[in-house]
Image (cartoon, rainbow, N blue to C red; front, top):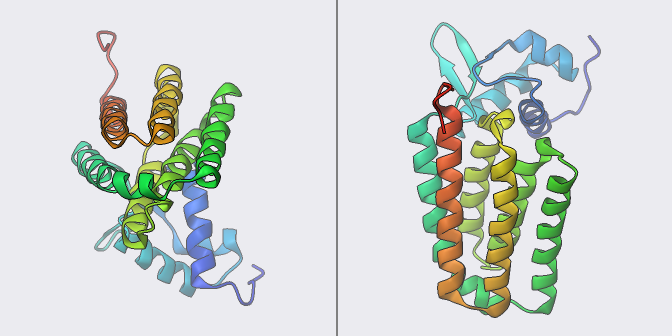
Length: 221
């Protein structure tokens, strides 16, 4: 094994997250220190340090005498994450709208267009990440770094732990439509309309994710 000198724990942390996002590491999979070290070309020390950090972020789970496993999202966790997301995104709407100008609206429009184009090309693997980037672009204009970081952590847990193959085409299409409604409300600088649009969007997202976690039967609607 060729060890890459100077590769930091932060870099290893980001690379392991990327491996999870790209499905190179599956939800529930046991993480082997030696295997990760060889794949990344590093010693085991930064791998262990990165996994410790990921455990603190609930991205991996540590089981005594068994080791680390890639995190699997539960229905209860989905509800908690989406409820927290809804509360935070709705709370910052007045601040976001107060700070909007032509330039910031163009940036949000660009984030919307990038997500829509990914849907049009059926690039499903990137849809969750681009969905998060759209919402985080909006959140950035609240000028509240604490809330922004909290939302970023929430989205990270959702797009790293939720199996992307469960994204239905119907829901992906609906997300684009709901994003358009949110953007329209922001352009009008209508706080009440934006709040309602975000609330309905988050509610729909939570319902879809929860349905995706349930075992499929021929009678599922």
